[in-house]
Structures are given as structure tokens and as C-alpha cells.
Length: 195
Image (cartoon, rainbow, N blue to C red; front, side, top):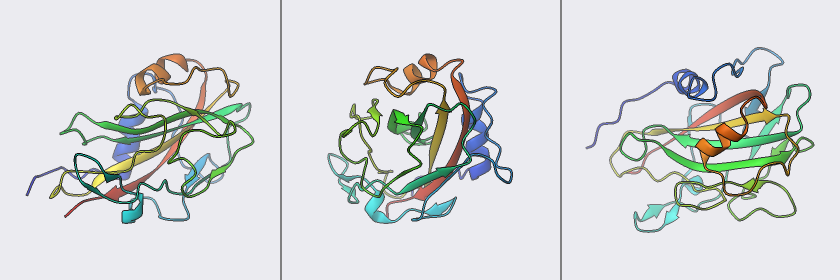
């Protein structure tokens, strides 16, 4: 069995919050604070298999259905949101970005189950570039036998108009492009392992 260190949800949030470009972004969860939730799982719960990646060269065992997400108490002056899904220990410790999306209109406060496991439609988001170079959701697919990986789903509020950023940015390019435009961030963690 391969060994992967377990990391608490709070530690994952803290690590991501101090990542280059995210210093100073408020990630606290006080009463009435910016918050992301899912009707499918609670923070640090195990994700249902249907949210895992499907097929491919790693023979992933899921259905690649994106989980439902809702957010509330957004920062003042928000014009758009971004959602980043990251597995800090994926890629044998180098980290994997499963979804990079931005340009989500400020009027949007949720994404339905399965809404983002296909290319953007009708301006619901601008697709960035995930680990496999795609602009849409790519579910978990850790190595068989690893302890559960922690998949941080972070939403970032920005003061940028929904169409301000070009499609195809990876996470690092997104961080650079939004320097000085991020108003706040919050996250939820889902865990997943393959046996």
C-alpha cells in the first residue's frame, strides 16, 4: 500500500491561502462569512464514487459527474467568481488541478450536479486548463491503494467582469491575472480513495 500523509481540511485551506498569489485573501469561516457548501457532501466527507473520474489510461472508477456547489455571503463588489479544484498530494506529491474555471457571473450562486463536467455553455463559466488540458471538471482518480486524497474546492470572488479573462488559463496564470482583483476565498474539502 502506498503511503500518503493525511492533511486536515483546515491545513489544506491554510496551505492554499498562503500559496504564491493568495497571500492576504480572507479564507476564514465566521458566522455570515463567505462560504461554499455542497448538498452532496459535508466538509471533509468522502466523495461519492460518481464524482470520481471515468476511464482513461489510469482506469478511473467513477462517472466524472461534477458535484453540486452552492455559495453565500459573498464579498461586496464581487463581479465574478472562480472555482479551483486541487489535490495537493496528487501527481505523487506535486499536486493536481482538477478544474480551473473563472468568469462565473456574480448573479450565480450555485452550480447543479453535472453542470460543469462538459465545456462551458451559455456563459455559465470560462474554462481554464486542468491537469489534462481540458476546460471542464475532471474528477478524482488517485493511485489505487493511496490513503484518501483531499480535494479542495475553492471559490474565489473577484472584482473582474465575467469576460475579462481569456479562456485556457491554468491555475498559475489565473493567480497572476487576478493579482489585486481577488476579494475573498473560501473552500470545502472532499476526500476520495480507490481500493
